[in-house]
Length: 163
Image (cartoon, rainbow, N blue to C red; front, side, top):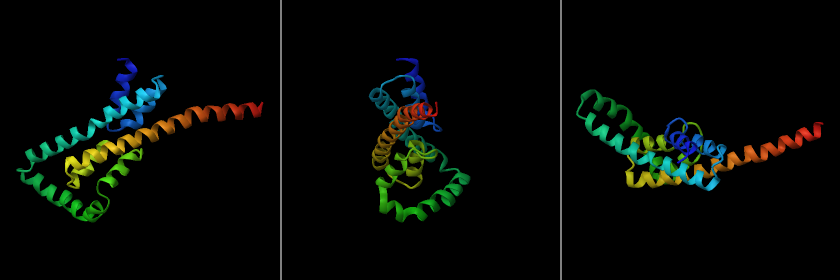
């Protein structure tokens, strides 16, 4: 495996960059669109199950502690009650759209955390997050192509007309 794949995979696993950082990096390093997309999406798909298992395990460990239980009841339970109607209305599709829009605070990490806070079962949340990651990969690849290919051609055209 080349160094570019390793770095792209690392970027896809980092909460700050995820697919939005890993896929453009892979493409900029000369990895083809299909292998870069498949690899980066696969790596980013690993995030949701790991985060959900981690949160569930940590929750079970911390729940007997009175300060944690108090904080959980006040914050998480209240958040669940406040958005329960919207979660029931949009459910997994809302989560998929949220994850699929490649903005700075959306992605598999935030989707998994949100699904856990809202009490979604992993068998519902993971497929929804996966659909969102697949869609985000397409959007990021298109954006990369438009910025690099079309953008470079537009700059060439502009500089030709200026001369």
